[in-house]
Length: 240
Ligand SMILES: [Zn+2]
Image 1: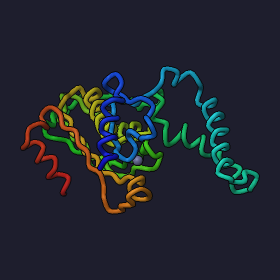
Image 2 (image 1 turned 90 degrees about the horizontal axis):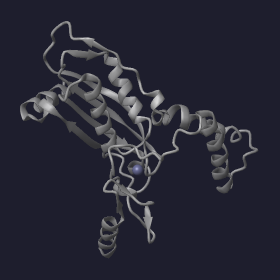
Image 3 (image 1 turned 45 degrees about the vertical axis):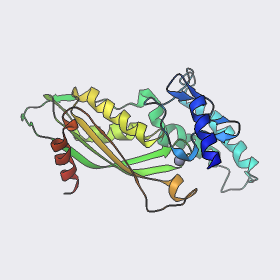
Image 4 (image 1 turned 60 degrees about the vertical axis):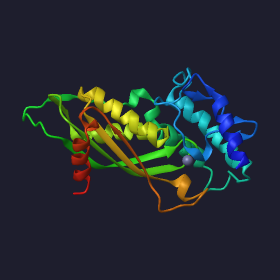
């Protein structure tokens, strides 16, 4: 109990610029840690984030990851381990964190809504493969997206690509949800967008509290979806 009070106090003191925290640890207390608090809707990137090429980043990550493995006592001359630093570097930059690089953002072309389809469009059970930025462990789940066309539509697979792009970053689920919603509003030229993400966090199931059955649900409703009946219609489609 005493610790909780201390932690709260530190939380208040440590906020900087209203949208971020200073370096994560003050007086030995982990500010965010298992609380999984999102501090901003933007992924926090430093100003030199894109100075290095992807190849240069992979070279550096390879060396640093080798250091980590060696520090843990592993013998990197072993056949099974010697390629691991290279594999992890490539996986970080080109696969699980490719969404950090804006150059990889999916190009989305918009089409005219020729069928005059005016009802809600729902795309459900979109795969979400992301990574918790507090523990660097997987977040795995599904996203369900809905929108009303403003007269323009996008290819359905583009919704999957947008979800995947923002998921492939170190993330917190709340931020991921808002980032996807904002991007959909932008490309679809409408505010009438809804998204629900239901995901399991490996940092909750395989360490810490080790709860394997819980999942985390986040949602963002804008425009027409602020209306309770519209929201209920969306939720009803998810039960089908
Ligand atoms: Zn975590």
